[in-house]
Image (cartoon, rainbow, N blue to C red; front, side, top):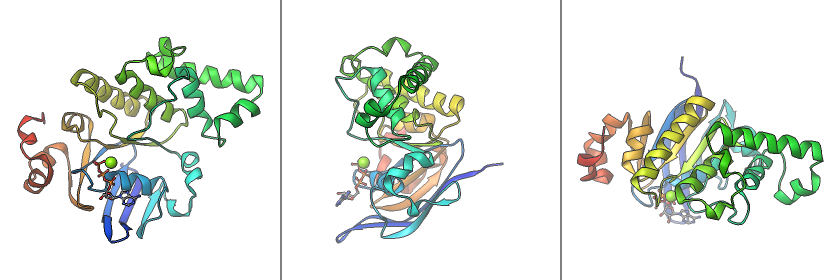
Length: 259
Ligand SMILES: Nc1ncnc2c1ncn2[C@@H]1O[C@H](COP(=O)(O)OP(=O)(O)OP(=O)(O)O)[C@@H](O)[C@H]1O
Ligand SMILES: [Mg+2]
């Protein structure tokens, strides 16, 4: 039976006179890949910022694994099992892939990389490196470990960002535009990678993305926002054929995107 992982209820966020998120409710079940789509400025990133507690909602409730997330401080979110990647924030360019992942693992129990460097004993460090290498190997990326992040092709950098988020052992990952700037081949590879993360690691995924080929390919279910409001929810097929969604967002894209 389906198990509810995340529940967002009547979520509202106002910035001054602007209602960025307006009475939005949806649920995510454990093991699902759910897409959150909509035009620019629809409120998608704001929903992520509310779930990760960057902002307090003006109104509404957010529950994760039955816990009231609004009682948690932002720095507690990773520890509760939620990790995210950012729309415009990449890896540390001069650090190796390995060290970037060590930094990601670190966020599960301490505040800063520096703290890790200073505070970790040799045994602990060895264990951490082993864990990082195991994670890279699991996804066939072991050879990338010593390379400076900036040397990787763009698609690989984005994959490493996702692996870094996984180092904190989240049950839910929030992915904000993981294929922005990617070509079709890289996009397809990322789609397969997101599926593997769900299939092999059991990680639930909430995905914000404008690339409809990816969204329609990987998502089990899609929630559509427009001007902060939820205007539709359903399977990729239902969303592609929903007249309101086509009018607000998909437009001609609906003819081209695969079902
Ligand atoms: N910190 C903030 N202060 C004021 N207004 C904000 C803030 N963050 C977002 N907004 C506004 O809220 C609205 C929703 O923005 P948001 O970034 O959530 O949209 P989005 O759906 O992620 O768009 P995009 O697809 O372009 O990334 C926009 O009008 C934006 O300008
Ligand atoms: Mg955004």
